[in-house]
Each structure stands twice: as structure tokens, then as C-alpha cells.
Amino acid sequence: NAGVTQTPKFQVLKTGQSMTLQCAQDMNHNSMYWYRQDPGMGLRLIYYSASEGTTDKGEVPNGYNVSRLNKREFSLRLESAAPSQTSVYFCASSTGQVQETQYFGPGTRLLVL
Amino acid sequence: KNQVEQSPQSLIILEGKNCTLQCNYTVSPFSNLRWYKQDTGRGPVSLTIMTFSENTKSNGRYTATLDADTKQSSLHITASQLSDSASYICVVRPTGGGNKLTFGTGTQLKVEL
Image (cartoon, rainbow over all chains, first blue to last red; front, side):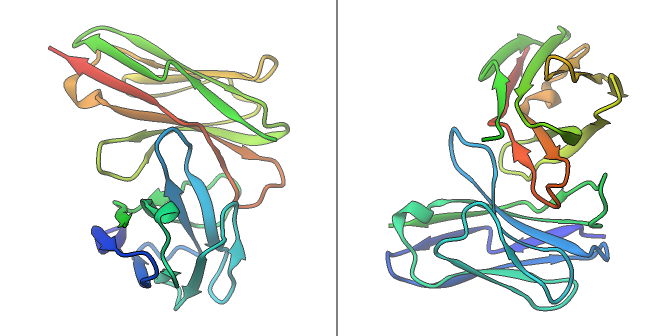
């Protein structure tokens, strides 16, 4: 099992460009999440999907959109990238139960110039 | 605002030595507290999980403790190895918070020869 995979690993964008970060999990998990990690700050939740067909905003959703394409895949889209969105983005998945473990992908490093 | 603060921010120890990392939180009530290990360039991986009623949990050379009265947790690493070099993140799950976790900023540990 690959666990949680993310593509691309690294991306450079110019301000105003758009892109989609892809995430897939093969653990048959119900819930999926997108986080960003910035220096000196804890991981912050951007959006999550508690189950297939549902999505909800997290702590820092502005400037992002998500799509839960199916149970396996959860994508994050930046419509018009800004330098403030330079960050490392992590996708995670879990069963959705109370004492769940969230399993993280390897991350996507995004640089917006 | 619910917060999770960790100390020290960074730590350097010699291989074979023990160390203890601290986590203070204001999240209340909470359902569980988890320690994650994050290797450089990788996603976080869960080490231990404790519910509010548990005092200690071990995973090999890693032992986590929890004092719910003082809202403190610690992670003790015994006989450190070079592979322990990583960031260690304390994560608290609020009761009724659904899928939303509160992440600390992490302690960066470096183990040297």
C-alpha cells in the first residue's frame, strides 16, 4: 500500500497563476484533509472532507477550493496564487472515527513568486 | 483561542543520551493528545496517542506522559539514535471538535555523534 500520495512534490508559480494539488489514498479512509505548514507555525487546516461528497472549511480556507473527486481522491486548487500561499501543503486521511490517526502524505512544496 | 505550545524550540543532544520534550496546551476539554514525528521533507507520523484519562503511553524508546490537571504533556526519548533527528509535534483534539486538531509548532531535535 502506498498510503497517502501527493503530486507534485514541488512547484513554482507566478503570482496570479492557478494550479491543482492532487492527493490520493489507498486505505479506504472516509475522511481527507488539506493542511499548510509554515515556518514557526503549527499545521493549519485549509479544508477537509468528512466523507465522500462533503467538504468543509477549516481554519484558513481563503484563496483555496477543494474537490472530493471520489473516496480515494481529494484535490486542492489555487485559482489565483499569491506569495502568501508559499508553503508546504500536506494531505492527510483518516477513518473519521473519534480516536482516529491521521495519515499524512509527503507534502508539496509550493513557491509563489 | 485554543493553543498548543512546545518547548524547547530546538534541541541538540549526543547519540545515546535521553531527552524530554514539553507540550503545554490550553485546549479544554479534549478527547486525545498525540505526538507526531516529522522527518525533514516528510509528512508527520503518529508516535503515541493518549486520551484525557491516560497518564502515560510508550512506543519503543518513546514515552509520552500526560497531566490533565496542569495541561502538560511530555515526550521522553531514551537512548537517542541519529534517526531520532526530526521535528516532534504535539497535537490536541478538542472534544466535539470533529475532525479539527490543534497543532503545536514542534520541537526540532538533532542527535549528533
